[in-house]
View 1 (cartoon, rainbow, N blue to C red):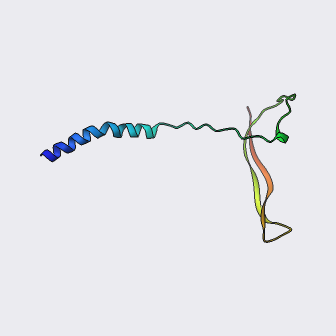
View 2: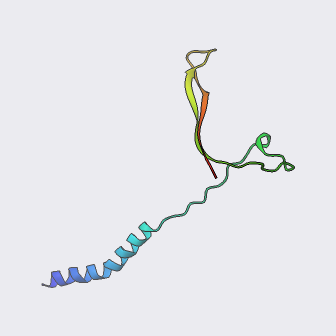
View 3: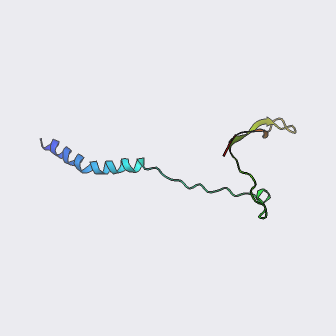
Length: 88
């Protein structure tokens, strides 16, 4: 009987800690994504303005091929872009 009572007391004391841990685990974590550094040769000159903006998703497709100069070495070569454009 005493052992059962002790178990109930321990469970009663640990229950709030368990509930708090479950709450923390379910809280969505917001991650800040830093913008990539853009090389100078790709930056838009300051005197130019945006004329048209569109939304799109897409990928650039690359293929791994043997180098023409050395067939024992490989390199990634650009194949094609693939994109889906959406009306704003």
